[in-house]
Length: 465
Image (cartoon, rainbow, N blue to C red; front, top):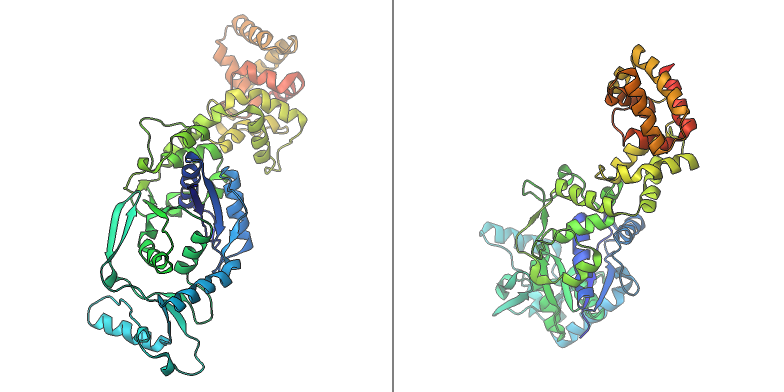
């Protein structure tokens, strides 16, 4: 048997972080077992499904490098097949036509509420003669659910879960207008796509009972179900925007690397010993469902940021330069060009040792593309006293006489400090303010070398005027 999993998002919104983890778990499980990972867009809610959301979901999956096998299946194109299966169930007697009106349904609900019980719908049309049907009314088709016994789902995460069939409705599978319900369409699509394992959030666990009855009614083999606990906020409540970013594209905009986000999501509800930082190849080799816990996970943004900092330090500098320049390009006051790119590239190894996100990395590098006069933060401005401006003119003369190599710059600064009776820090801090507009930067000799002779001397002259 070829293991085949699927991810089936609805394009009624962006890809939520919980959906991304579900996609990742499906992908890793299928690849671990040498199988296939398929994608289905469940776009049957025509009022809320949009092409823009579909594109955003596909973009998010591509950014996360969660690639699916074969063509994307769009559920909305399969309505005829959904109806065909419903009519096959009708012919087999495992479904029936129902002319129950909304008013009748409302009355049944009100009666159940008055009696203090839940409504487990058994339509009067289940055993009623269709010849008595009202004229001109299009019937729905309902499953003829078993009334005795129980439905058992042997879940690969939750273990055996069971429900009494008396608790389940004769649910509609095909509406009066011929459109399928969610429960029915999902089963038909999963069967036709050859899905062997349905891995999804545990908010779908009750759906598994209803969907199992459709599989059984058609005589189809059920897939194996695995329902993963949801992701909560740090306070234990359902994850929402009040906790922070929740969509994949928000995390991208905030400067997280896709491999870091996937690494964090992998460890959110799944474990393998003490392993923390895992590459995609390592994740595929190790991932299986027996490592998935049964308790809800809590989103820890600080931990995600720490994981991201690890992946930043591992990242190729050419790639980081591309990302940083793309962020800085959205800041119109900066002067980006070849010179700025070279300066940033020279200091990237130093920047990425301290940065936790790409946005932080870009913030650190922004001064290298800042045109004169540099904006000064208050602490930097305070360092540019009249005495220090005079000192900077002398420092500039000493630096101009060097070859602007790291060794030459370091030697010149140390020699000037010694000759003027100052500590090196007393020279470096005002110089750093003049060069960067702030009081933090990589080592001062590296900053000078990255700016280059002309730019560095121009910045010192502007700050010491």
